[in-house]
Length: 191
Image (cartoon, rainbow, N blue to C red; front, side, top):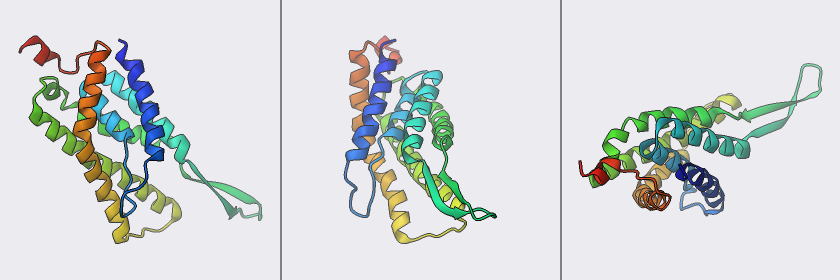
């Protein structure tokens, strides 16, 4: 299947593009990697989604791994403290992708209303990814703090994902068909 390696290249390209997109007002970020994982969850077999989730999570975790210095051990020597560890987003992407793949039987029929549902879930799950990252950072720093700006970042990232998901999914469907992969096989069969 030629679409699978192309999808992995799109995941890497999506990460690069995501890093260069400027933040929206309120420091709201546009997250493309979760949307690509969620698309793979509804448009490809489960094993493909797991590999896409692992690749996307590994790319994101390798880029976001934060090692804090300046913490002293009991003997006065500096210690390295890892604030965000590699692997957390792989697991989270796989869990959310598994939930999203439950909608694959409906998605393969190719009805337009399913795009609304899947886009809504992609927005909610993108907010979950941002919220979990915030909770992990709070947990590692030893205290929970919440401001209106943090709530805006979490909710705003989900709203942006909900807004761009339908167009992104349609573009990925076109790319899939160019690679001779049909994301809606039941519609193509006339069922």
